[in-house]
Image (cartoon, rainbow, N blue to C red; front, side, top):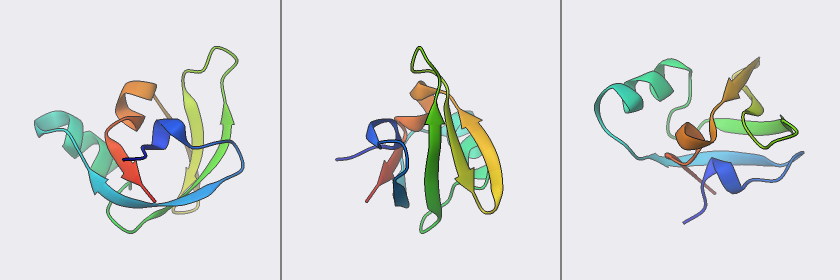
Length: 73
């Protein structure tokens, strides 16, 4: 299983599945990250957290813990 946390800078991936439950899952979906959405990884902070991505035409910073809940292909 490959998650958003493991994607390299400059790569574009597609969301396969969201893991997690309750408020965490709802928050990720509210950010526009849903099944089938393309995500482009723009950059990673110097210490590795957060990860900056482009989703649905806007830039988003997401924590590593949340990125681990997004399975990608």
